Image (cartoon, rainbow, N blue to C red; front, side, top):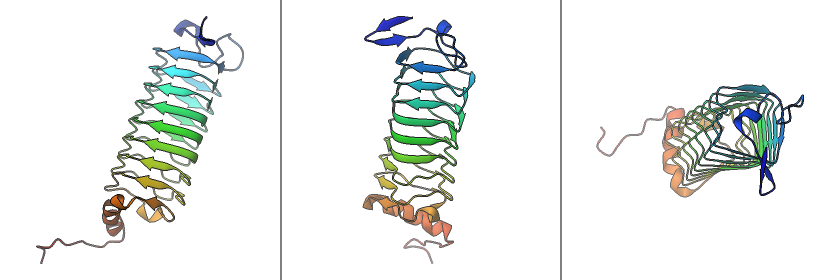
Length: 219
């Protein structure tokens, strides 16, 4: 392995998601800079990444069970159709990542910022969020059913058709988001909305309650 700026740089041949870069028994990666790597379609249980930077790394279609990411940065990564269960992120930043169809189920995110990412059709069922910010993300038809979103912030996000049924949303904040056609609107008790988001939400709420809204020319 080469060192660059105090951070190890791993090549594809030296990185096995099932084992560490030194071929130990556990997949533990620390202070690695992973750039332009193809790690797609792989699987691993219990992989742990600490203080790693993943730049333009391809993890699409990979399956991770009980993975842990701590103090990591993702930039321009491909996480499309990544599947995880019981995985966590702590103090992580993701930017300009492709995360279409990602499944982060029954997991946990704490002190995480996700900005300018494509997250359409992603699933976050039964995941707990704490101090998490989505900024400028495409979250169309994302699935947050049964998630604990208390304290989460959505800013400048497209949430068209997103599903929030049975989600905990006390203190969840929305600002300048497209909420057209969202599901589970009756679960939004305690959420905080910017005034410009209220119109789209009112239509979703009316639909959930079976209220028909007539236009000025309707009989």
